Amino acid sequence: MAKNQAVQQIKILGLMTGSSADGLDLCLVGFTGQDHSPDFEVLYSQEIPYPASFQKSFRNPLLLSDDQIAILDKELGLWFAAEIDKVNLEFDFIASHGQTIKHEPPFFSLQIGKPQAMADKFNCPVIYDFRTADIGQGGQGAPLIPIVEQYLIQEEYSDVLSLNIGGIANISIVPGSNNPAPLLAWDTGPGNTLIDKAVGLFTNGKLAYDKDGQLASQGKVNRKLLDELLRHEFYQRPPPRSAGQEQFGDSYFQNILKQFYPESKQSFKDFIYTLTLLTAKTIAVSIESLSSMYSPVSMLVSGGGAFNKTLMDLLRNEVPGIAMSNFDVGGVIAGNKEAFGFAYLGYLFTNGLTGNLPSVTGARKAVTLGKLCEPQTS
Image (tube, rainbow, N blue to C red; front, side):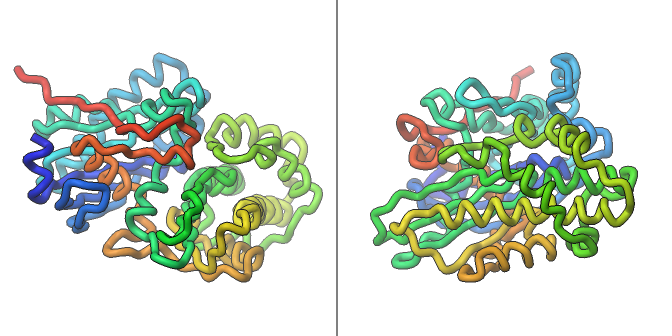
């Protein structure tokens, strides 16, 4: 079926829920082609906030018991189906990343959001579990979006950086097609996750994130705290590397608080500013670590952190030679790029095409990513 459809437009609904646990991103894409470079059209995209109960659970996933994970798996799949039903879209496949609960390469990576609920609701196949095949080849199972970035932004002669600042920040260097150097990508460290936790604590849960970086803009650096944060062993690891709540989750945050709990409103703002500066500095270190084979002068930024003005100002100050702008390529923008990416990975799956980049994940070879969940016939 996939091969017959590939010469016509195939509509795939990409779903993405990131480590920030803000909600569900939808992106409906029409693809026309059979190879890694099909024509595409973004037909619809939307961001749907999570209910508060999901946000609380998914921002501290390592605290969940196996029974809680099983219940949330079912509840999230049903919620996905209900929210998709509200927007009344037509599609041939759903490609769902799911909500990451545990990411422990080279052993496993667990994303939940039971696909059967969606397959049955819409009577269409759901492609899911995109990370396991790469891990099975010795890879990190992440990041997976770089092949999407290669598809969207590769130029002939210029090397381009792509940065996504979600809960965790990750960066890609997409060499020009005439540059023999490989595409590289890795997680740089925390993106918004520590900032979000600090803002939630400071505001007693009234705010989930630092809108426009307003709180951070009122603070100044706590040098002792910053120096301690930069000692984390993760920053010493060479790529390929990936991170998650295992490295920068609630346990790590609580350890920071034990040493540096802010005792006043101003010291809390200094705390938030310093965590924001940490994100900027660790991204900058990754950019500066690139070998002389690469010479990027521009960077496209996506994810929620792209809208944190204080963070972006700090990052521009750290790497003044790099021109930065929000991701915007043919209808793929900062807010929907990840969901578009999983629609594209779903397209690759339907055509039996490889979806990982071994130079990025460390896998032994390129493989097709994903599994297929078919509707159950009554």
